[in-house]
Length: 212
Image: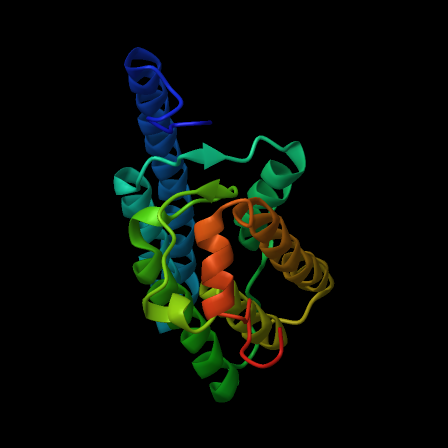
């Protein structure tokens, strides 16, 4: 969806903005389902990290309602497919009644805090599929270009180690692959913007400083 005032007549721009508001509301409503999922997990299993997951989902829902309109959004079916799969797949992870390993509990919480801080840094530029909004260069985005995905990987890995099962193994491998595929898709789309190309020269690392 193109919501660039320089390329759209006012009446078409207004219609596209209304469509975007409706989409944002629908996405926020879907996230209420995520929130209910984590609340149920907390009631059954307890755990501070489960509350962090719930807080993260609630924060994302709010950001969807207030986020900026994109100037351009990818229309590639591949980009949409991996974005949707990467968003919903974490719901397939299943906690087990296994003893908590303190170090991995802490790492999982640290990953969640990292992802939440990344969302706060991203703020109104939040998106699921690749889209051109205001480029964020401050907060965690001053260190790596995809801090939210880094937080996800730390959190997923810690959860997986504590909850080993055949299902979780398949889901975890899929989530890791999807994170890297989404990073590549987002970079490919955003590099069309001169502003983002300039940002990549300032912040060289995509995910982990001095590694990648």
